Amino acid sequence: MALSEIDKNLLDRCLARKPGSWEDFVDRFFGLVTHVVNHTAQSRSMKLAPQDREDLCADVLLTVIRDDFAVLRHFRGNCSLSTYLTVIARRVAVRELLQKKTLGRLSLSGNEQVAAVSAPINGHHEQRVTDRDEVERLLEGLEDDDARIVRLYHLDGLSYQEISRTTGLAENSIGPTLSRAREKLRQANV
Image (cartoon, rainbow, N blue to C red; front, side, top):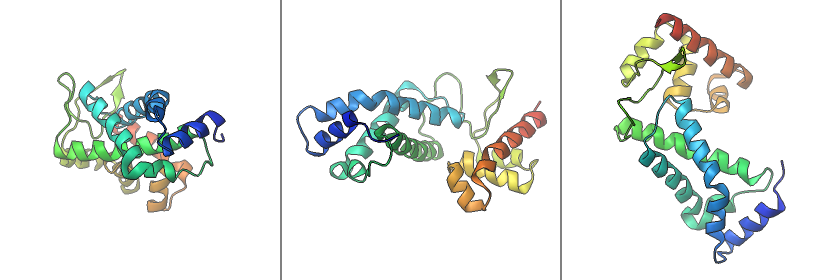
């Protein structure tokens, strides 16, 4: 999808620092940023407290305005602005989630703990793993290649494309490999 005229106009206004343009930008894209942050956390089996969600959304927006809107200035318009911001938001969220998880700074809601690997079983999450050593122990039951892909995706936060470049596997084989590995982990933990 190409850059819409509305988004092009909004982008030009932001880069020219027109009054009210940043507020319009936030109004237009804050829901998208929130969705990406929620989805990114959920895909890593992490349940965010409201303050962590707000912090991550703020980190994304700060990334957009940092260095005089450098992220927006680098936008070439080859896709929609929403698509571009989704990629930016996901990268920021993954980086921050990994850093905060490593440093133990997530304020998790309820009694839940950070999950490095957990699989929904019968619609709910079982005991969550908080220790990298425990994750490694769980992954010992997988073949080396599968365990490596699970580590790269869940622990290192790499995208399918990044995993493909790292491992030499076809990008479209990453998802099925992750699904098979999750199923093996579910069966081993039943």
